[in-house]
Amino acid sequence: MSQPQKGICAEPNLHGLFLMFNVEEGKEAIIREKLAIMLEIFEHYDEEHYEGMVSGVIAVGSNYWMELFPGILPKQLAPFPDFSEYDRSAPVVPFDLFIQIRADRADICHAIGIEVCALLESDVELVEQVKGFRFLDGRDLTGFVDAADNPRGMKKFDVAIVGDEDPEFTGGSYIHVQRYQHNLEKWNRLPVVEQEQIMGRTKAENMPFSTHNQAPFSHAKKITMQNAQGQPIELLCQSMPYGDMKVQGLYFIACAKSPQPFTDRLRNRIVADENGDYDKLLDFTTAETGGAFFAPSINFIKQQAKR
Image (cartoon, rainbow, N blue to C red):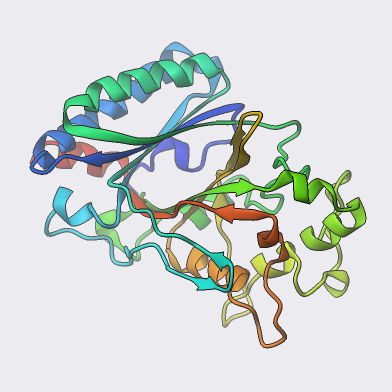
């Protein structure tokens, strides 16, 4: 299998930097070369600061893929799914490039970010930059452990990395990104018992409620799905909290070997079922962006740089 980018299945870090770029028209050839150079930047910092657990991800927007790599397309690459119902929505804000930088040191994320932006500066517009951080013992700013049911160990690769089903793109990953802004003032007015009912697990101990005891509108209920064979539909989430003293939220990143698990989960959360139940957590957090990307293998990026 082609080598996946390290950041896709990396262990959680203390710090992250997330960069969104749009590329100027006619710059495709130079961008293909610069993406390969960017891999070298990640590798250099990883070797120089191995204790920092450095990793990076380069992902190309679904809307920009055919401009950057004409004639070769991941089989399932599709635009970000557009769902809305009443005041619940998943806005689509496409970007050409998504760069994820993570490490256990904020200064290293910053240093890599400076080099990445300097490398791309003459050919792109930096549209968004968000700094993420680990909060307490891996919790979201709501106070609950984030992605508590994430796959672990080698299972991450089974869930997140494209295999032989798409031979040209083995080692790649479909990535969906949303920036959520929380209404923590409203959330924190709820008694803990109501927060736990909405999340479907205990707050302090991070213990899931039994399926029988989960409310039909709980977050846990709405993100737990099975396929036709009764197997769980899984995602690898690499999300991180972000914010300052005024704005707080979650920078949500989902990685999978197919875009379908994310699409199914998002629909399940937003669109109410026959009983009118949707993910009640959406009453307290709002998605402000949404983009679909593909993170090709290291081999693919290096090969395409030579075109």
